[in-house]
Amino acid sequence: MILFDHVSKEYPRSGLALNDVSFQVRKGEFCFLTGHSGAGKSTVLRLIHMADEPTRGEVRVSGYASGKIRPREISMLRRKIGYVFQDFRLLLDRSAAENVAFALQVTGARAAVIRVKVGRLLAQVGLAAKAESYPAELSGGEQQRVAVARALANDPIVLLADEPTGNLDERATRGIFDLFRSINTAGTAVILATHDLELVRQNSGYRVLELDHGALVYDSTSSS
Image (cartoon, one colour):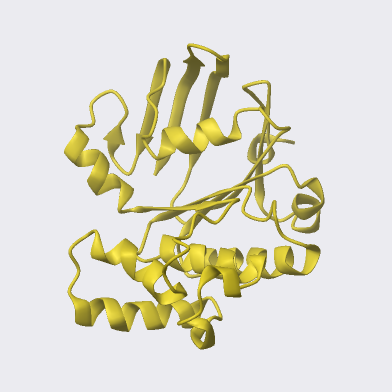
């Protein structure tokens, strides 16, 4: 479903972010993407999202290739990709329900469909009772749950999470990870970028890809 084939990415100002990275993520897989700050984790996610193009090599996502994909096809692909960020990125002047609804409105979904789906998604993340609450009225963990619900709005085949627990305490981190785990169990692939090695150690049954200075230095599936 996701293939990196000898991918390098170099930025004009900051230089080489990824260096000859190759790996494959299968449909429905759960993957930790680890490494120190600046190791290249966010770059990997941006390449999957087709927000950046590789300098060398090829990225393939759900049948689309980085060097051949058209702008219109990028929009279609992104509807299949959910994205969760460390800083939540919620619209502060909209309620939890309105934040989730926005992801459906931009695709042209009908109001009746949006209403039903928003209710189901907020229930899925445990926030049905907070549908009318605004971000400022929610805890950090609750805001991240809204962000997860929004990322799931278009039934993605893969959920990308960029340091999603970085601003959360231990209890909220555990809750968000359990939510990602349940999403994965339901069939959605998850790629969770984190430098929280304790979180990775506590969940050792999942695949780990480790980056160091832009190079892929460890893949648990190929480790003896």
